Figure: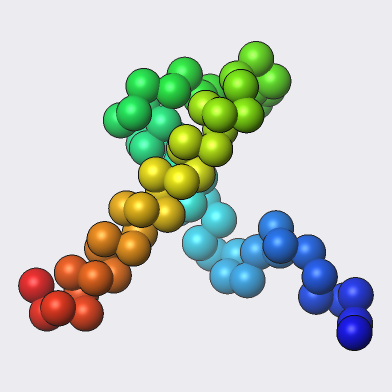
Length: 70
């Protein structure tokens, strides 16, 4: 097994990084998590996890809509 591709945080599409960061802040604002640029060590792991989980939920919903032809 190769270690060259083992990082789960690897950016596969560098052009998407800025869009994903923007999306992250939009989601955090939507759900009331005070995420800010820079240091966010004052947030709990639950708050950070909620942002990530909600991002995934919204991305899945959008893909389902596209697959359904809506």
